[in-house]
Length: 189
Image (cartoon, rainbow, N blue to C red; front, top):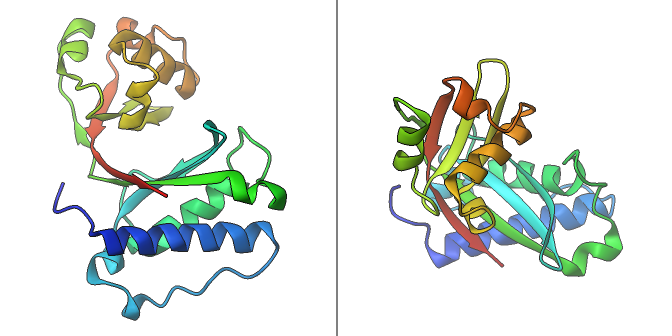
């Protein structure tokens, strides 16, 4: 990954995410993002995930793997989506806002990971470093590198990623899948 964002750039993105979630949950218009006034790196295309937690438990997580819009707009879009559109959770309610914690992950571009066997795949994955994308051509799912904290065993990590993809947990052992890895710069409030 290129140079990490500065503390000021991180603070701007976290404030944008917080203000956007608060406005949306309270039924107010989104804050306008004045791109020309932002630091150059926040105006560049960037891919992000925004993760919301409440009392330490996941409350929403939405993002994209490919950069297609300015990073500031990407973070704003995913912050609102994590609060209101994550199918696993009901939308965040106004009374929850004080307990919501925001984490932003800025992603590198995913790169294909070549492997020859399930064992080779396990050897090539870097727990705590690599985010992983699995695809069988029809379905696709990803886990951010932070998920390794909860699933430190490589086989279980891949089992759970297959389940997230809507497949049987052992699909990665039975069939060659497309695998991509990426890294993140993660920061939170």
